[in-house]
Structure formats: C-alpha cells, structure tokens
Image (cartoon, rainbow, N blue to C red; front, top):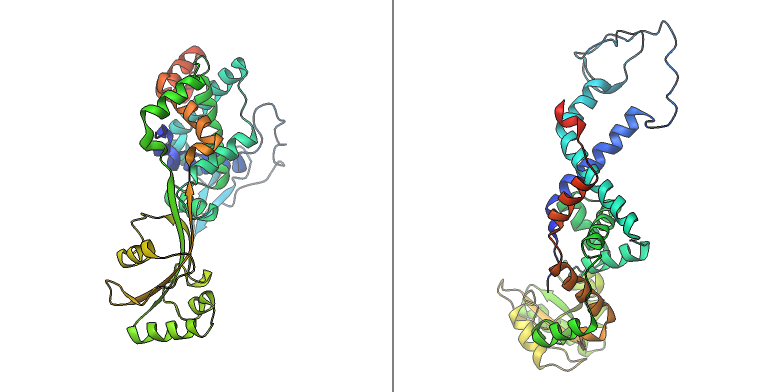
Length: 328
C-alpha cells in the first residue's frame, strides 16, 4: 500500500525557499522583537561605484552583496530580487507551516526526533545506503539532510492533524492484510559477489586463482572491472532475488547455486565475462516487523481522512491566514 507523498513535488522549491530565507536573515539582521542594530555613524558616505544605486540617501552606507568589474549588486536590490522570485511561495509555505503547527498544538499532537528518524528510515527503503539516499536527495531535489528533516516534521504534523479523529483498529489492519496478501508476501533476498573481466581467458585465470585458494574479495578488488562493486570485494549487498538489475546470466546461475558455490565464466551482453559466488540467501516476512503494521494503520487512517491539501486549506481559513505581501 503506497503512502501519500504529495509534498515531494514541492521539495525542490521548498529547499530553494529555505536557502533564500537563510540569505535574507543573514543580510537583513535581527527582526521581530529583537533590538535593531545602531545606525551608522554620521558622515559615512557610500563609495558610489557600480551600476546599482550608489547611495542610500540618508547618510548610511549600502552593503555590497557581489561585484563584477565595476558593477555592484547592493543589498536592497538583492533583497528585492529575492522577494520577487521567492516571496509569494515563501509566505504561502510559512502560513501553512504556522497554521499546521498551531492546530497540532491545540490537539496535543507532538512529533519527536525518533518519529522523524523513523520517517527518514522508511524513505530510505530501496536505496543502497543512507549515504546514497542523501546524495540522491541533494543532487535531484536540492535538499540537505536538515531540509528533509524539516519536511518530514511538517508532513507528520499535517498527517497527525488530518487523522486526529480517525480510529483504526487492529481488526481493520488484519482485514486489510487478509484482503491484500500479495502486499505482504515473504521477500526472498540473495547476496552475491562478482568479478567482471574483459575476456574468457582472464575469467579462466580468475577461476584458477580461486581454485588455488586466493580469496574472492581480494581478486575482485584487484582485477574486477565492475566499478560499482570492485572496491567492496565484488559484494552486491542484499538484493531481491528477482532484482531486474542482476544480469540475466548471473540470475540464472545464482538460482541454481548453494551458498559458497562459484559459477563458471558467464558471458555478458557487452562481451565481457563474469564470475559470481553466492554469499547468502534469506527470506523476510514483512509481517514479522511490527513497524509494518503501524505504518499500515497510518495508511488506513490517511485513506479515510480528507486530502492533505484540503486540510491545509481548512486550517488557513480557520486561523484567518492573510498574505499581506500579495497586495503589494
């Protein structure tokens, strides 16, 4: 049962907004109830260089943000461009975050660091590692780990608000499992190591060295051409037995092998040759993990709740949210 991931389409935008806000705060100084910085000393004049406005007109010196040749980007122009580019989106997001937080507080809903950690762990399923997950999020969505944690906090609060008055019983969970057994079928995984070389002759030489007692992982590090696994001694890690990324020749061989067996040379589609060894097999029953049932209960509650978009709209209205920037 797939969970509603509606906010992911906005992640890149929100990451940009967070970065823009950080810059705004950095260059704007304190706000809200904090004391304002003292005014500049009398008589200080701007340098007058650059194509932007050269002086503040009130005796204060304008802060430079960037410069190229004789052209200078001053703080006021910089802030104006940020406001024009991101202002509406940021204010809208700030309003939604604020009303959701207010409603969560009124309902006694809290999200712990552990809840956020669990959510991020669920999001990492299907990635090779935690580092790989964060790399993909950073490169494809422009989101840092902190941005992902902030996003998870918001979604968990919003989901909590949406489902606050919905009750899902253990009987509901069991009924769903019984009606959808294919979603909870045991998963069969394998772990194998591979060595890829450029000719059958070299593959036969590898087999000979293995027969002489040279360790498979040492040979993989030394001669394997597979960039993904060579550094790890050829180890694929645990993967599904029917993973489509396992070369067909290797998948067929591994299906007939016992743990510890080494295959004969296998010819690949690109005319290179592969030797594999089976490191392990395991069967995982999803229902042995209590977290699966908790996640299912959460999914069933969300299925009965209004859409999260509708919940946001209702809260914006309830708390009289107003975007004063919209009229500027």
